[in-house]
Image (cartoon, rainbow, N blue to C red):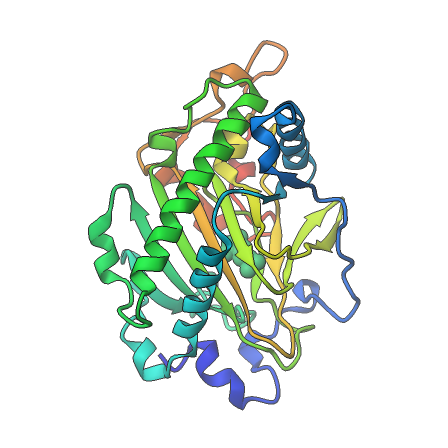
Length: 341
Ligand SMILES: O=C(O)CCC(=O)C(=O)O
Ligand SMILES: [Fe+2]
């Protein structure tokens, strides 16, 4: 338990050795510019004449950046504020109260942990973050019973929030179907059977140039919907790291590896990382929508043709995740390369 970064980092003046990255992986001191070209999609325009343009913008952003942001998405601001502040309250609780939820057992549907991507064996480059992870496959009311009882209203608000995010993901995936020329409802069942809600907490760090909150990686599932208030997310674009500007109450949408496969490479899963800062704890509320473990992931028939042959081998979602968990430590930050034909 004492290994939670939020438990010990207040008392340190320097970054402990095991958190210092090898030189080539460090974010360094040179400022990373914010990328001003990542599209912000106004979902209010979907119902009217703007629909075609919205879909095209989403498609182009997914090809060029692998991410875009959405506003007027229909999830109430009070609900987003409520989820964010309850998650903050959770991390602000005394270490003993959080200890109950701490677990290194990856099969648990709910747990608090630190350093998922840095096995104990590796002595360098641990991530400067703690994570609260909720995993569910729908419908899954009983899983909520394993979530924190404190702060009061946590279960209720996070439960409502997760359900709203799931609805938003379905709307977005229908628009993506339109853009790809895939039949509507393609993602309606097995391909979106699972939902993970991950709360990343990055405490202030004495020297952000030496560490990362989250090392470079791609997300393995279908779609990411991320809520944030403070800056810290960067993507690797056009050969360099660029910053993503947080927009209050927007959701950042990310294409994941298994959607890249289904789209036959038309949509790109973005390599991204999170940096820390010296003054404020940053939180990101991350929702991953993904397939059932048994789903076979392969390019959709509608996106493949003689002139556009399959680029990826079929694989079950479960097997993809196993490959991913090894490959995520490598320079690609994902297992996509291993499936290329
Ligand atoms: O905190 C962030 O902005 C990124 C987190 C992330 O990439 C993840 O949880 O997969
Ligand atoms: Fe990620």
